[in-house]
Amino acid sequence: MKLYFFLAFSIITTCGFAQSVTTTTDNPLKSWYLKDKSSDGFSGISLNKAYTYLKGKKGVPVIVGVIDSGIDTLHEDLKASLWTNPKEIPSNGKDDDGNGYTDDVHGWNFLGGKDGFEVEKASSEKARVYHQYKSAYENKKIDTNKLAKSEVWQYNMWKRAAAEIEPNPETTMQLTGMQNIAVKIAEWDSIISKEANKKEYTSAELEAFTFTSEEAKKAKMGFLNLMKALPFGAEVKNSFIIQTLTEEIGKMKDDVEAKETAPIDVHNTIIKDNYQDFNDKFYGNTNIMGKGSMHGTHVSGIIAAARNNGVGIDGIADNAKIMVIRAVPDGDEYDKDISLAIHYAVDNGAKVINMSFGKSYSPQKYWVDEAYKYAASKDVLLVHAAGNDNKNVDSSFNFPSVDFLQGGRATNVITVGASADTALIGTYVSGFSNYGKKNVDVFAPGSQIYSCLPGGNVYGFLDGTSMASPVVAGIAALIRSYFPDLSAVQTKQAIEESVVFLDKKSPVFLPGTENQTSMIILCKSGGIVNAYQAVLKAEQFSKKIKKKK
Image (tube, rainbow, N blue to C red):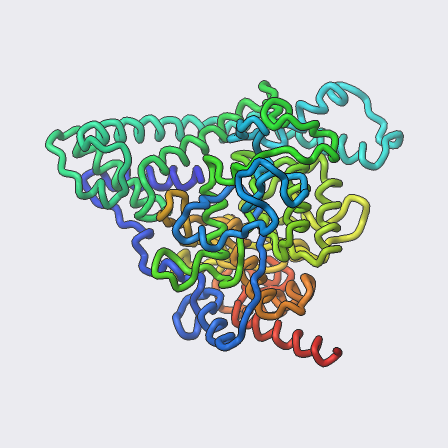
């Protein structure tokens, strides 16, 4: 996210305040990722073609668990697509269905306390690991031969954290740059708000403002060009941009100060569970929206925004119902929260779970491993974002991972990298995307994805494997709706075996470099997902199942 602000600010300072910046967010191809290459010219997932083929067939409702930051449950394009717990009576203060979570009507929030206080921000897992085990390992000679397997894992993780927690001079310099940008934006916003007598405004509203003072005119041009240069879209307001920048600065500041400042134990101070006791699991509250619901709202819109309702966007899966599970804070998620979130989704009927999150450390990985196995035992498909560090996850740490600590691999997980279109960025692979011939299964559209944002009727663009993952989760939900006889593993197989392969002349660059490569080097399937082809493959599998019966 910080890269967006650096680039946008660089553009407007280079162009000068008197000039108008051309914005990519006015691109009419807001739904490029749903289009078909042969008929539309864009390398999307051929969704309309899939629905044309499915015409006349009836699908069944499919619950999709979205483990994320929260969702704007009042959004015009999402409120009709929310899962509703049929056994829970809203707001009666009773646990009607006896699942341990009182009034969980549309899902559950694992990031709050029973007193209503919320975790809005969490530290990096690196900082938590470093400070938690510092007294046990720092300046001590450790004989790993005398440690249990789990302790060796813990010790090696701490050594890595101790090496990586040293302040990075580049991050320190970037933090100063971001803080300077924030000061300038706050100055512009103050001048505009005062002269226009309006605290919130979109770029279109700002463009219509008429100012008399030179100071206000310059502020208007500066902020307007910034809003246009950022990739969020024309509907987002100044407050959204300022909040996003503030959050990014907070993350960078925490990273710079991580070694000297121990992180706050939010589970102890806010959530108030015993974090080390996995059986202490009925914590949290009903606030599934939260303040930081941008990410989860965008993800949910990709999967299940109401189709053909004349507003906003069309989600991928027409019969999907979103189960909202809030477990991903502004910062790194906690392993216990993620494990319990998976258990909650599985126990309440989810057949697909989207997981657009990840981190480089997982101290309680054994809890997450167990949850993966539990989901597999209940025939639930997990879809996970590969990450946005343009690194090879076959040779670097990236969690949650499909390799279990005790040996073996999860078979009910699809890991997703981010693809693009050459018309957008000149390559078929997003430059930020993680990759891996062994550990990334498929690529799916993840650059310039237009979807829902908090605010009731707001939409905008975001980039990331976080956006690519729900594209695949949406296709999986589509398959499990129209071909409910397919298992989670067969659904995964249908998606992977139906990918579109690029010809050898197609421009594909190793993420983060200018080195040309091929898709078969970047992921196991060697291709980009396609809803139409996946539906055809799923139908083939379904016919074979019916024949056997």
